[in-house]
Amino acid sequence: MNGSIIKYTIGKLLQVLAMLMTVPLLVGLIYRENFSDIRNFIIPIVIALLVGTILIKRGSNRGHIFTKEAMFITASCWLIFSIIGAIPLYLTASNYPSPVDAFFEMASGFTTCGASVANNVELLPHSILFWRSFSHFIGGMGILVFTLAILPKTNKESSSLMQAEVPGPTFGKITPKLSQTARVLYLMYIVLTIITIIFLLLGGLNLFDAVIHAMGTAGTGGFSNKAMSVGFYNSRYVEIVLSIAMLAFGVNFNIYYFAIIKSARQALKSEELWWYIAIVGLSAILIFFNIRSMYDSAFYTGVSSFFTVSSIITTTGYVSLDYGTWPLFSRHILIFLMFVGGCAGSTAGGIKVSRFVVLYKSAINQIRKALNPLRVSVSKMDGKRVDKEVEESINRYILVYIFLFIIFMLVVTLDTNNFEAAFSAVATTYNNVGPGLIDFGPITSFAAMSKLSKLTLSFAMLFGRFELYPMILLFARDTYSNVRK
Image (cartoon, rainbow, N blue to C red; front, side, top):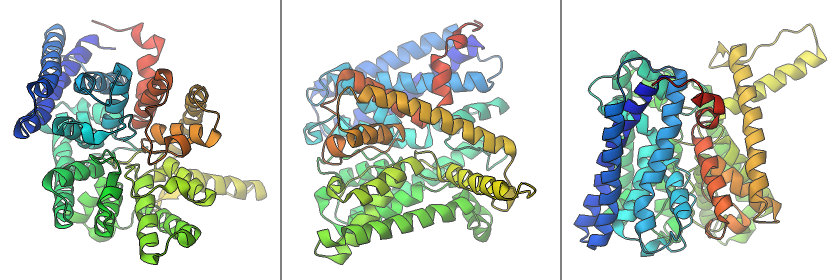
């Protein structure tokens, strides 16, 4: 690998981090927080600038960024961001007693997981509350996508960086220039966020609360500034607005581009989109009938089931009620949705709807071939044949995914003897959802876990956010055996 360009690029990204951390610092000044709260952000800003400048001077922007360099930069960048971003949380007086707790919270923030170790978020200063949710907003579309959007120029190989960070089995530029693609994506992202803020303000939320929950929705992260999450507002209007917004951010952003710039009819032909809508609709209906007897109002039951399904499948993790008390049938539907996730090219986590569709069609073809060996069957998506290479890559991905899930699960079982609790804890962090079930459910936090489990689940979040391979590369011994200065 080209070590010089890796140092240079990470150095530039650290400078971007320093710039981004000035935003919560300004929030602290606006709310006239104590100097200690302001200082908590000044320290990591100085560290990021100092380390970034050193790396830039020791590195070089000459050379090429190929797939291996791109994956290494992506994984190491997000790991470093989570460590430096955790400094203000650790220096804060409450909720984060150890560096591991602070790292868990910021890894959860940047990966848009939303799992938390904070027992009382309402004690946190406005600057920290904003920083947690702002990390969702940054991580949702991607740190590198943001950097590519603001850089004055990028080389043609920067697409490798974007490929390594954008979730989903495929990646494609929507405009000829990569930097322009990144700007278009962020423009749509920001516009949708502003629309969400406006509708939340109309629902009675103050500006700070509206911004916090809109950023969590945009990044499909789920951090709230209320201990009861969205349930604090006891508003069906707010729940419906957030349900629709969460589902909107779980859609492939390329579809919005084609719908606005080109043809809405063509955009609506997306097979993944219709599968996504069908899964949401069917899950909400099944849960509605399963929990109907638990609540007096059919309207409340319908909104709650729709909100929870939207929150889980988009891996946002907002909570309006304790769904941990729902029947086992409904809880298992939610666990299934944790794995499905949103569409490829969205801000949502999970395995992605498109992968499940391809796996389903491949399985059907295999059954047909077993019944009739002479029959030739091919899988299609959007009317186009799915290449065997894509099918094989998805199969390999699922195998690695399951193998890592088992490893994370083994570590977490040291903390609990409850299988459903351990399984949901790994499922919710690995798929970047947030709240799990039982001991780690919607009204509890991960604070009681051991430091080993917290650290393990922090890396599960990072592995899940980057769809495994960049993080595997980061920890592979061979990665460091042929690094060129």
